[in-house]
Image 1 (cartoon, helix red, strand yellow):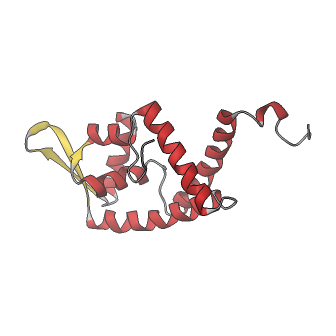
Image 2 (image 1 turned 135 degrees about the vertical axis):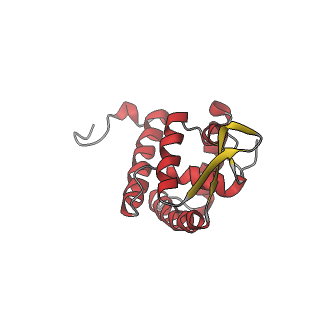
Image 3 (image 1 turned 60 degrees about the vertical axis):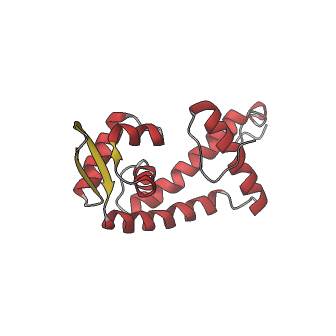
Length: 157
């Protein structure tokens, strides 16, 4: 074993390798989000879900992106304060709020898209386009299997 390298027995551990890769991905996207003043990586999937689905309840939004209800509430409150979201009572059920992305939020999401693409390109730099596509498909299958979250744009096998 190289004294500065990972123990050899970890080299064959997919869970450990995924964890290390995830740590690097979180670092890369965190750096880019921090540079835009975004305090949490969860803001991106939240905005992306609203841009795709339109107005939805906070509870449904959290379920859709796999985020805890209290984290959704905190993120929505902050994003609303920044002018990226609107929140209003649901006309069909005034006990719950519907959240929708604003035009300013759509523009900000476009900025975040660029940062995410940049971080992803840096993380996946050693992989060919075919390897990237294969990895994405395999990871989507694992996510679906373990969480039930379907990843659009990937085919089931």
